[in-house]
Structures are given as C-alpha cells and as structure tokens.
Length: 468
Image 1 (cartoon, helix red, strand yellow):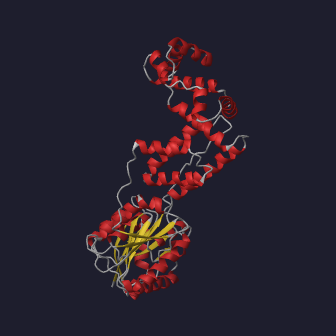
Image 2 (cartoon, helix red, strand yellow):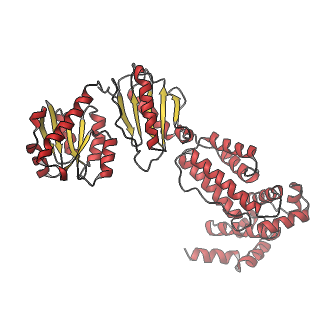
Image 3 (cartoon, helix red, strand yellow):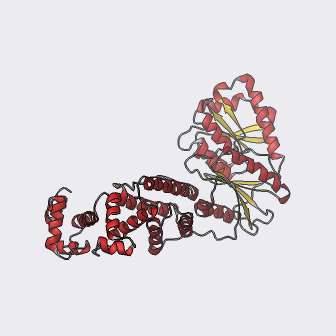
C-alpha cells in the first residue's frame, strides 16, 4: 500500500482531495495531512510516507522549501505538486527538484480523479522498479569510481536543468547546494549517465559538468563538502563556457584561496601602470599570469580591481588618456579576463587619438605614477626625463599635451590635492604635511596652497571640518 501525505494550507482542499479521490483503486492510502511545510516535516519524522502531495504557496514553509528539505532527508519519497495552473515558474522549479508530477487544482474535476491517480501510480511503479536506496552521508563509498556534478556559475537564479533523467540501477543523486547536484552510478552505467548529464548542459550556458575521480574510500559527506569547497574556490578560475566538462581529482589541492601579500598586490599594480600590457601580448600574458597566481577570492579580487580603476581614473580621467569603466559584478575569472580585454581595447582607443608614439605615452604614464607614489621627493622635469631617456624639452611638451597641464602645474596640483587629504583626515601640523608632499618650506607651501585653493592650509582645514 502506497502511504500518502497531503500538504496544503487550505483545509477544504486537503479534505476534498483526501475524500474524493479513489485511492484504494490504486493501492494508495491517505495516512496524514499537514497545513504547511514545517508540519509536514514533523509528520515525516514520525510515520512512513511513500507519496507526498504538496501545495507550493504556503505560510511558514513553502512547498519549494519543503521539497528541498524532504529530498535531502527522505530521498526515496515521491512528491507530486498541488498548484494553480498559472504557477508555471514554480512548477518548473518543482520538477527540477525532483517532483514526479503536478496537479492543477482549478482543473481537477471528478472525472479526472482516476486519470490523475493512474498517471501517478504508473510513474511511482516505474521509479521503484529500479534500486535507488540512498546511503547515509557518513557511509564510505566503495562501489562508485566517479562522481558527476552539475554546477552552475550563475548564483542569482536556479539552474535550468530538467532533472528527470533515465533512472539507473544503484543510482545516487544528491542536491549538493542550490546551484549544484551530484550523481554516481556503477561503472557499467557511467557512460550513459555521462552523456545524459552532458546533454543537460545545453539547457544552461552557465553550467559545467565536473567528473570527479579518486572518490572511493571517502564518505559521501566528504565528497559533497569537497564539491562545495571546489565551487567556492578553484571552480572560479577553472570555469570556461567553451569547455563545459572538467575532470578533477579529489587528490588535488582544494584548499581555500590565498591571502594576498602587499608586495604581490604592488607587483600587479606596477605591471598595470608601468608596462605596455595593453599593446603587447607578452606583457599582457604576464599580467594575466600574475593575477591568476594570486588565487584571490572573489571579494579580494573585486577590491583589487576597484583600487586599480580608482587610481587610474584619479590619474588620467581628466586627461586625453581617458577613464576606464569598472566591472560591477562577476561570477568567474573568465568574466574578469573578458573585462580586462575590453579595458585594454578602451585604453588602446584613447591612446590612438593622440599624436604620440606608444613609447612616449607609456613614459608619461610612468612619470605620473612615479610622482604620485613618492610625493616627498621633489621630482623635476629634467630629472624624470633623464630617468626615462627622453630630452627635457620633448618630455615637457608631451607631458603638457597628454596631461593637460605643464609638468610644474601638475606637480603642484597633485601635492596640494594630497595635502587636502592630510588636512581633513589628520591632526598633523602644517609643517609635517608640507614635508609629506615635498615642500621643506612651510611658508612656501602655504603660498602655493593659497594660489590653487584661495585659502591658507589652516583655513581650509577649519572650513572643511566645520562643514562635517
């Protein structure tokens, strides 16, 4: 006898389905009712149930949440969805979670009762004819050579996998987390499962099929946790929509991503600002390799890219060299590299609009960054041009054309801008601030500051703090 649980927040619906349908004709028996998902789970803990009919829109715990929990706790439980005909998106989600059928309540008429139960009964028999007993999470895997996992890189929406695949003897299937699901079958059935899962990739461009080896002598919990850790770390860098099948071993290092060192971050910034990576494939590849070798977590990588964009735009946004746009979100290194390529193209376009060679443009960019990074040093056009191996007069001309200010005007501008930050954000003396921005004479610094701002440093500090 197939034991049935009916879950719906409408008491009349529960009573109507329980009393009106010809359960006995199909060896079915209603053993319980529940008004929401939480109560249904409580019932499942106390009594055996083979088939659960559940509404989707319920208070306390929705039908979708109930399905997720029940599939994890009771893998052999069959689920049929009770819904309104217009809940199409919910129906699709329920089917992806493993529902074997759905009943549209508004279309359920007396003459259809027998047809509906016949259909459900047939599907249950088809599924129970194969052996699909799920092991416990702590059981050690000794029979299965590979585990196959579908993983979606899109964390914002449910994957579009039609989860109903041909049942395999001894098949194991678990939802690992919201955007990944794992399967295992005996070696004789692996080829068939592989091709079935590979076919599902066509339904979601963000999906990847992981073929995981060295899974024997591991508990199922260890395997699931390894997949979860992989999707949070290594998969970020491995994902490529042009290669949707990845073979990976559980013996491979799958530890957390690295904590970056300051010198590694500085090295990348130096490569970004001081090498012609936008116009040279060799330097471009070196920059990409530096990024990848850091193995930064998504949040850390976002912070690094943000700081690079902010610094670039601070230096060049108001010049002919142009600004670059920030990448606002990404789910993989593949997307980050695509943004880097677009940024390179944008910088190339801005550079092409000038009349100077790439070598001169790169030299001016390098000079600007040298000045910005060491304001205590009183750089001169003569000294920097000599360091960059360019004549002083030509360097001064190029600098003014590209940066929109003469070298001396730009030098005074960036020093005063930096001193503004010190004045508003520290309590240090005017003399201390003057030294930090390259002026040894406090009076001379104050005169330059007033020429550019109309205020003395002390007046600027007082006015700025008074407005806070």
